[in-house]
Length: 504
Image 1 (spheres, helix red, strand yellow):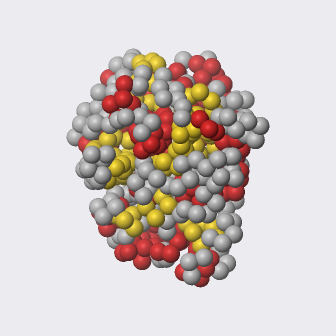
Image 2 (image 1 turned 120 degrees about the vertical axis):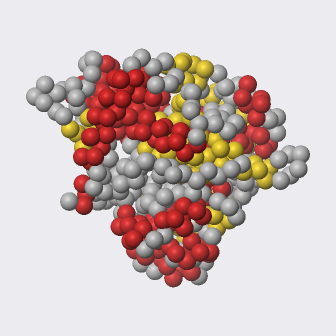
Image 3 (image 1 turned 45 degrees about the horizontal axis):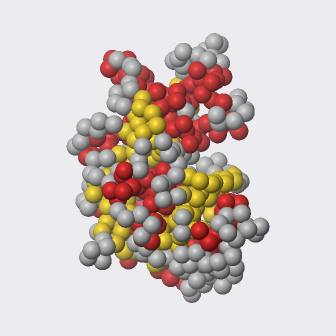
């Protein structure tokens, strides 16, 4: 057995990557799928299309159905996924009852406001480590149950199954034999108690969710069943399921408390390892399960917690330049266009297209472009987009240092947009600390592969994984402290203009 097959199901595409024993990607395939926008602030996916694209890229990577040879060298499957996105399906037919509601979707913001007004904010933070926001799965699931004809009655009879994307893929891979999730994904639902590590009856009652729809919770690394033998010519053990940001933290070898990474994907997600202690945030960050693994010596489950900050619009801001404004042909074009001007000319883009995440949590904020003059060009807007990504990350970085009480000396980065050298330099300038990019930037898939490989004995321990983490490039800050502070103060003025817009 020479490889681990990692399935990386993201917000805009499905990928499959084969990793060898050195943690190197030896073969990969990727396919985008539709983004569905039924109304302003609503974002949906076709769950069948997600499964179809995921299966397609698996077959491409494994040379199926042409040759079964590669399949026979795969030790097991790891699943990592976009989190919070909510799927509800029929247990008997395996068919979704409606489109999946994506994590970016804001349709339940008013429900969250009503619960907030009733005083549930502290209860939810104490039990779940999360803020009360439409970002998470509970209100999405309740919306599907209430707005899909007959769904609530079917759910209470046990005929429907709920899952985030990990659970949906596991169900499809096992041909409906396994309905399970892991703590890293469960902890993103507002239904999971961080302290008992179980679904919480009080929270189920609050959101009116029948327990019958919920998946079983299993450790992130371990046995989740086997793929149906008719899918890939032989049954493959499924040995890990872990949310994408937690997987990236694991793939960045952030195994010690105080180590942090930021992933530049559709959104930007910064996680800080707090080890066995769930740290309560005073600055609107999230306390989340990083992962849960079995200790080989004691056979006990060990849980690692993280502080997390979520920025909704990261790489999606670049997609908007491409698909919305049509000022670039591909995402890679943004770097050269932005470099064609030396600064933004006091133009600021606040990409609050689906509201603002941490540390603001304003579901009614909307995208805003301020400071334009007759001299503003598409190049200025492109550079403002890159700066907006870095400035949002800088805001959550500050909040994370305050919550943890740590002065972070570096930031490890990964994800597609981390390949943009200009963005990484801007990021270092706005943080005032080095930004370090590893040689493997697809750390989400790699982290999931490592989690599965440890469970299967493919890798011996985390020390071996740490030894395989290598630096590609280190970006040192160039801005003076005065320039950095002035830039960020101007940005905060722009953010204030974006807040609350959808209520007006």
